Length: 166
Image (tube, rainbow, N blue to C red; front, side, top):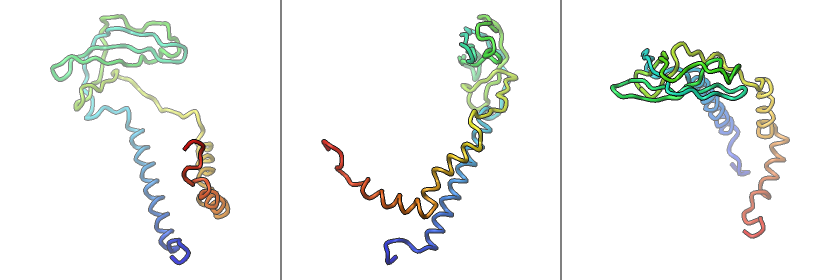
């Protein structure tokens, strides 16, 4: 630590720990995203009734407001109407129509239409582009040349009170 920097072995251990924590975080987020549409505790089939259907606009799903009994109380929810994004002005439900629902066993406020398939979601941004952006953001930190230039530029940029009126 003569030059103010920690020993090389300590920096390597630090980099390995940070990379492991970041990788674990990405895996946990990906797992949550994969299971995001699942109902907690599993689903119980319930028949609800339609209160109102609000039409969507071009490319957006219509929303249907439903009422259902769960846990001895009446609950209300707003749910998307499958396929309504293709023809948003065509009504699927009328007020009072029965609707098949799946209600969470552990949280009766979580509900979805029975047979609702969220499908496999695809991002409009290709994965290779995300990897390229990530590499561009990480390169100044990892590569020695850009890292030295970044370290040289930071002390001047971080001086306090440099702005007018402060």
